[in-house]
Image (cartoon, rainbow, N blue to C red):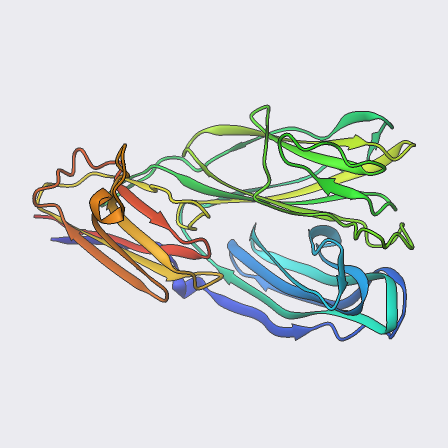
Length: 373
């Protein structure tokens, strides 16, 4: 008998705004954060909202950012020349109306220099087993020559274990998007473990359960050599993607080291989305397989916010690896919708709880099923 669960709730998906463009800023117009496009959305139920936008410069130096109900949630960081930078975020929102503002700031420009945010896409989607947290430190005074905790220890709990037909949830993807600013000072540097503090700037460090951890992606708001109008365009960007244990509690903290020569007001804004079915940027094992021997497992992977090559495997890398063909009993990879099945005839299900391996950041697990024999 076949048991399956459609985890990607496609009936809940809707495009709220797409193909948007803020229009170009006026030619050679230096400006601090200026709203170029305002979009209001309305949700009739709790959903995950996905937002994307590309900040594009033409012969200038500046940045783009997005606010949610006037709280900054996303920044391009400082960009220069003719660069285009894509940024995206997942946010879990309850039913209601929300306002996004797309803003630009330009602090230097060549002849005819201007900028915009385009390829804007706002959509809603849904999965079960999801949760979120959001934190805003507000302005915190950071003494010169010292490291100050800007966002104090915040405890968040991963969604609890749930039993599916194929087995219990074993791992949850946690995506943390962080906006970091020093009020009226564009000198913010996210730092990894072991990196020194930036001279004459504010260096940001992120801690999980009391230990500093590396950013999976980070962008400073500073463009070296372009220090004009330093009160314009402040706001660095950081992202962490972690695979965490369901039902467990974790602690998040953000510190800033101030080397600017005077006390500064610093602020951190964090958006966290937790869901086992969003594929992280590392190989993971989302489910502990638990069904009768001889049954057939079905796994469907789909593009989500991107269409990467996705991988699904049964097996485990050996202590001496001679390549994937010798490490895995079955594997499949590809873009688009990936359909994988494997019958546990000889390989024992009971001893395979850690042997379902999935990867492909930008994709999702859409369906899990088992034909029980």
